[in-house]
Amino acid sequence: MRTNMWNYTGDQKYIYADRKWWNPFVGGVYTFDPNGYLDYDAQAFFAAYATGVTPAMASKAVGVGSQYLCTHTDGEGIALDGAKTYKLTVPANVPAKDFWSFIVYDAGNRSMMATAQKFPAKSSYDAVVANEDGTIDLYIGPKAPDGQESNWIETDPSKGWTGIFRIYGPLEPFFDQSWKLNDLEALP
Image 1: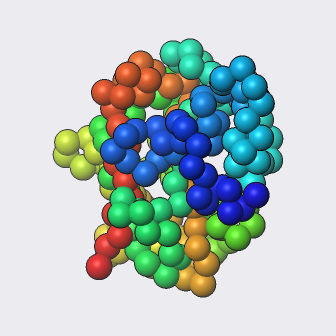
Image 2 (image 1 turned 30 degrees about the vertical axis):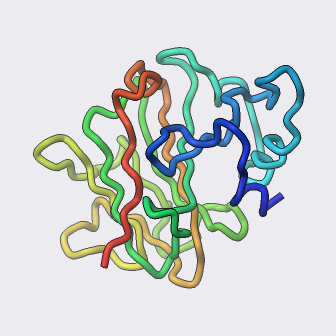
């Protein structure tokens, strides 16, 4: 199942044609049967990544439910490494009626990354610092870049990781893709 998760080749995996964010609900439905038959590969893909499912997790209704944007690579398609530092520039005006969050998970066991940081996450509820244009630069790595502590998520340098960007109460710009989440960028 893990091989299927990391290398799934089925239709409709990626959310955007030009980005590395993928939908854990391949085909966009929580029943894994978008074509009228049960897609066992899509179901195994999801089971290797997550532990529970509910209709609201795949709802396509504006302002209702949630949407999940997952990645295990940077924008170049290279696996995320806990020893490296990455930047995720979240575009301004995240289309979330309720809130958004980005959480880092251990690639080996799917649990939240265990570090000295209490929660390996940032959200619209946190005191993250926005840029003048409204974008937010999140930094993910073993050490916070100078002056970026409020926007930093700690990783374990001995582990790979995956990330999930969640949008709760997704609004139309998410669905029509006029708002698109940027890929993670590996920093030197």
